[in-house]
Length: 254
Image: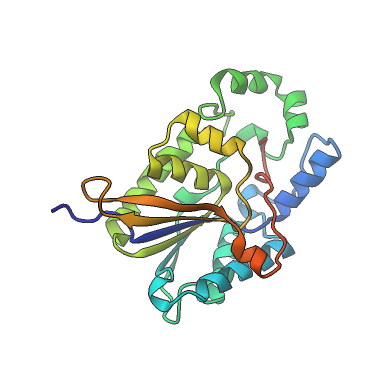
């Protein structure tokens, strides 16, 4: 009988609304070429609403029975993700005997390279060749100079999942990351195709503090598999009356 290699339960959460999300929305509304963000993308913090969203979601996890709450919390090193994870941790998301919060750089945001902090208007003005490359190659494979494609993100996430399987099989694991991380993990965990994951992406952005949840099923394959239970779940925010947002990433083009 094969040993279980997956967590018993896995939650993947996008960080709360960031100041970069807010600045990007303002730049697009004004049809500006550049997003007004002074920090490096790694240093962009949560907005005040993003902090509220994170605390609300932390309380939702804390309200679960002790034996159902996450035991392990993994987070992207980006400030907005770490702040989300820290707020959730402080609200008791990991229970009365909280485990460690582990920062894993493989969960970081997709790197936008030369397109960082440009809106779609700015990219069209400054890098029309990249617009054409992206149209020809597709969103999945296009890699801007100095940046990453979705495939690049997927390669590092394969490694992260191997580490999770090695160290946290049979446990309850909570990941805090970014929109592309949520989608690329779905691609890996569900064995999706390029067309299938991009179709999910076209349906709409992942909500800030939206929850994607998997549970272990021993039957689908040798050693079992993680089965999707819900995607982009925002009821925890709505139930407390916390404003929900679903803005694209703070840097680069959607």
